[in-house]
Length: 413
Image (tube, rainbow, N blue to C red; front, side):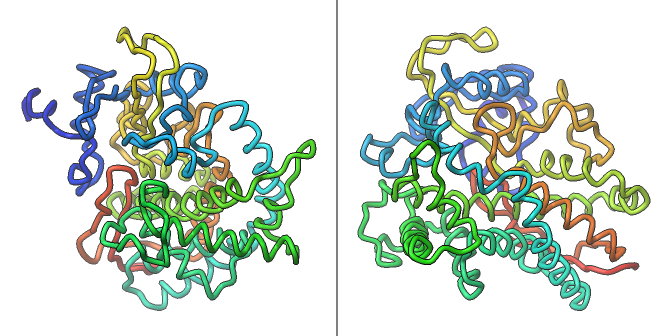
């Protein structure tokens, strides 16, 4: 592909990601124009593609704001920003406040307490996959595992698990939903992802929160509605937004990491054999899976003042989009970055899950624990995977998802 052809590729078009991350395009951008002027729906933004520059942005929230203009690619009117705003779309001191109120649910002690439940769910799913022998990995393992874990932690009744999966999927790929789906009467521009599925999640979370205020349980929803720091509590809108973020992020990102991770082992069977022979590499494998998967492709910031990045002048109010999909494969940070290598050094750290900065993912310890437990249980059963059909990827410019991953699951071939 010529330089002109590379430059002509629209990195915001979902079609660009139909076969995975366009690594050659991002490599060209890192080499030739690491802070590049691009457009989305006719509006300009700066595309940040190098690892070091992305870290500069994420570590400087005073200059690169999450709250001003929020983190979507598209622009929103103020009313929509006010209605949609979650912990992701805030700056200090509000971000610090929300983080302190949400943190009690994700302390090390809390996450360790979730491990037994995670392991029980994982064992059941793997045993069922082994018995079936030929499965869609997404439907058999990577989709049910994180959603069962997060809804169980939240306190969502098991009978509603499939409904939560449905709503989370529709947030990413629910363009065909009618505006009034789920009884929605809110203008779509006021809802996250402009989806009526967000209304359904808000409404479900609101009802569950009201139930827990009257009848507390040992679950995450109760922790959130009762959380208090110096007399401060989450408002009902803040709680509903937090619930929606937890269901989506707790499901979709971990699901995407697991799907891409298992596909990487299918494509690189020697790496799974290495893990079987050296189980002490599990923690390295977890980080490599997250890096290689890069579940979220980008996030947007807005410059709060005139600044300069990599020699490029950025003006106050300019949109700055950081591409994890590029930074996690920057050969200046990761030798041979396109190789899936579970012996790769954990430092420098991958930058998925919002690593490097105050907006690092609140639930990252939970995601790491789920992936680690899955790997440990795969090793315990001597499981191997083999491709059994074409991979179907999610059509999205935001989530690096896999919709279908047919595979044979066994202990030998």
